Length: 137
Image (tube, rainbow, N blue to C red; front, side):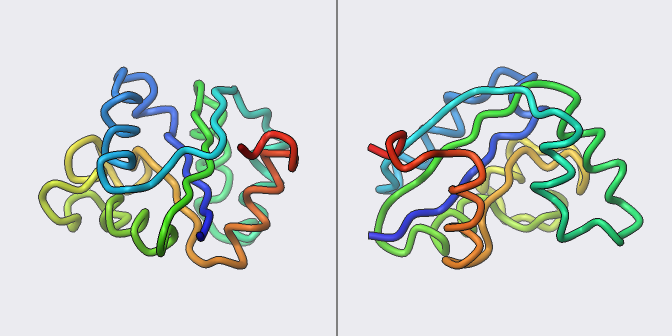
């Protein structure tokens, strides 16, 4: 079974659609192996998105990700990384297929409702950033 990290971002959490997004995962055979709601500090958001540090949008991304609560979870299932990315839809919600999370709940390319790991390797790194081994059920 694969595992992947998913984050429900501040824009979606503020819209009170956390349950609707979780239902998309569970209805598509992704089990929640771990979950928590938290508010990221600037330091944590900066470390998590360090791969983008040199990009022009980095400061805005950190500011956005610290603007409210997020829900971080480990999704588990067959082809979890690919399935999660398919359910999320394109990064830009205007380009996302109808019925995807971003098409239904995202406002813009910046406030795009969810984050998902892009590979198994990154999933392992991202999961370890937020969860200890004993938190994974």
